[in-house]
Image (cartoon, helix red, strand yellow):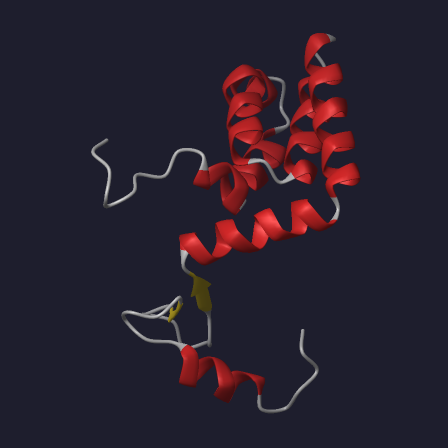
Length: 127
């Protein structure tokens, strides 16, 4: 992403147990995870900078949902980057999409940080 040869070394320096970037354990490859607080901030910043596009995706997701078009509703919710909206569309249409033979979108949605963030248990809050 950075097109720098030393990007991996930079991530290694930033990663740590109490840092906002951690290195995934158990992998032979170099995989990193951004802390959920930093990820939420970055998503919010992207949404703030391009509010018109995010709002358009949210509007489209709700429009498709009212027409019971679960596939397009979920795709638009993911494009909006709103965790609550993505979780809402998964709740409304996820099972139906799987039963209709299109589980790939549901699996992609479940793998998206936006969808997981809506259901994540935070250590400072009781579930």
